[in-house]
Amino acid sequence: MKVPLRYQITEYDCGPTSLLNAVSFLFEREEIPPEVVRNIMLFCLDSYGADGFSGKSGTSHTAMQFLSHWLDGFGRTGRLALSSAYLSGREVELGQNSRLRDALLRGGAAVVRVDFEGWHYILLTGIRGEDVYAFDPYRIDGLLSVEGVRATDEYPERYNRVIPARLLSREDVAPYAFGPVETREAVLLFNGNTALTTDETVEYMI
Image (tube, rainbow, N blue to C red; front, top):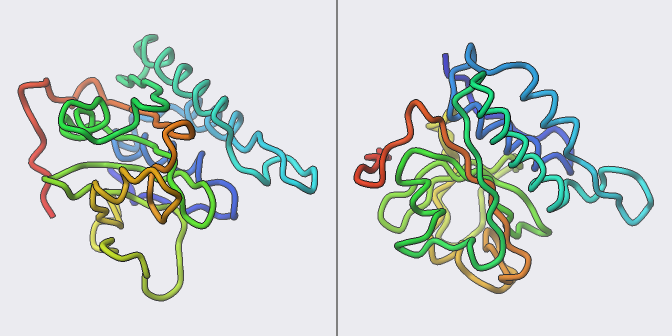
């Protein structure tokens, strides 16, 4: 059974929430071992805020990279058909031959770091043409006021934003932009039982 993707419950837990959403998007509830949930929560929220309190700067690059490697290793045990790869810098782009675009076309998911009034993690779940389907775990009241981005509550198991690829690809600091190349990162995740080959693509329906 698929369950709706979740929203973060504090100002800081976009990282673990997006990773959990990626696993939820890729697998049925009955398939997911509790160890995956435990370790995602255990290793995220590792950055200290300016006031010295742990977690108030969210989740670090180091933690995301570690979790990507841990999830990939866990998948290799055979307990969950999961694989993962960590991308950074110039690897994080949506060009026609990019690993990120390829992952989305083949039914994978990606947790990416974007700007949204500060650095923020969201989940990408698909791409069709130049529209990228995303789930932003930060719930807002009222209307979304980001030009070119469409918000929806109609697909709670897949996405709540449709973001133009050109906006995500911006190198400046702007809402939903990957931002400067040196700060970019993404965690790619796949369900080995459902991922398509490079000769196939997902027909992602709006």
